[in-house]
Image 1 (cartoon, rainbow, N blue to C red):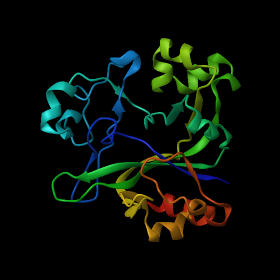
Image 2: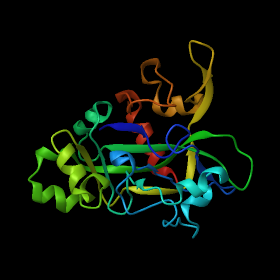
Image 3: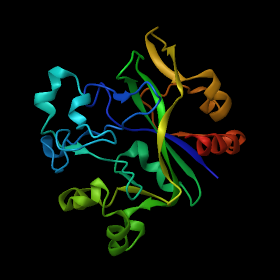
Image 4: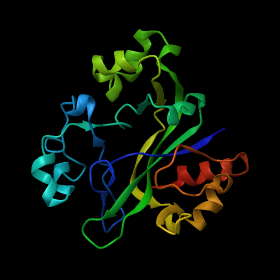
Length: 240
């Protein structure tokens, strides 16, 4: 079995903010902007998409960004309606080796919305893997049937451009978007002494230290070592 941690969602480098964390521990997942061909292609925007609280997502953006971002298309990936994720880039290529029953654990940046809580990284959901591979591993008809709601398949021009290198992951019905976020980060320092987010000491007991590479601020997928897989899977599945 494998357990993999993967960062997703809006952040200060892609979107200009973090997602909202509420006082009761609930949260909202904000996708990154869709920058297809520089201007976006998806019909879902921060201004026309509502969250689980009935607010439009643009309300969570800094006030100075709202007018500009209201009509900005979003890159909704992963999506938790049919549980799919896709990525054509080399850093995510290894996800094609996930197998049925593995856990792909998504974490994102959140900060306090109705109370003060500085930005941190939180587990926000996971897929129990049903299928993983490249789109070329399946007949085109099956890809479209299983992954038709995924961003990369919703738009033919995107799919045709990326098809030969697109890695796709399908979660089973046991996959979940959490109701409460689980904090996994603390602050450490890089070699230049600059502050950055690392896997918190308590979470290293759960997930291990990835061979000493504990920075999770902007990182490639982190594969949990075999020695910690069982405990990590039990912890993730226990989250509310």
